[in-house]
Length: 187
Ligand code: HEM
Image (cartoon, rainbow, N blue to C red; front, side, top):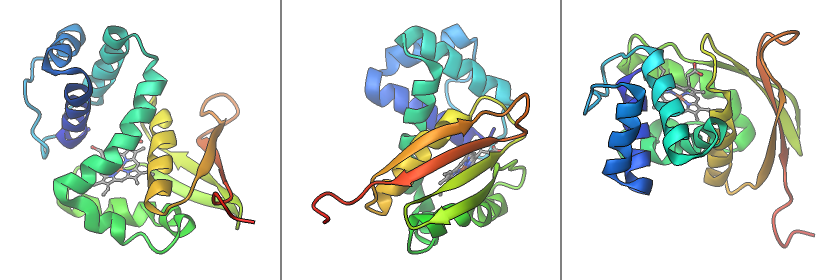
């Protein structure tokens, strides 16, 4: 995974819990790097170990941390200068989810070794949709919960998202069912 991701994880832990906690996470994960270079590729194992160690140090389930990380990623990428990519995702949450692969394709112009996930949107209605998530990686699916909620916030949409099918066994990919909630005050 590109260092950009590990940097964001480091910043999330440092901002919420302080640098000492991050150093404890890093030590527990057996990760030597004090700084991750955003444009360098690191083995996925590094990210996995950091998430597992953060879960142990913070006494929080890894899934919960990954969801929070998904939320944070939406803010982090803005601050890091990728806001234009998010602004080009079209006028609605529906259009944005349908445009994710195109967005990552643009990211890969900057990060040539990118191995982006792939998404497909089905069952689109005004009330919601299903988002199919394909990745050669395992273990990052809970991130989608926070990412999609964060995207929803950008569009001023409140939503419920459910991890409806988990990759493995009969499912060759993860599926998330998304239901848009009526705006507060709407009739
Ligand atoms: C401007 C915004 C974004 C940027 C710059 C960006 C960039 C990246 C980068 C650099 C990676 C690491 C992949 C690698 O190193 O091979 C990544 C992974 C990922 N991205 Fe994005 N991304 C953005 C927005 C999003 C959004 C909105 C979603 C979904 C709603 C998303 C879903 C994911 C997921 C799930 C991964 C984990 C890798 C995997 O599942 O295989 N990203 N992205």
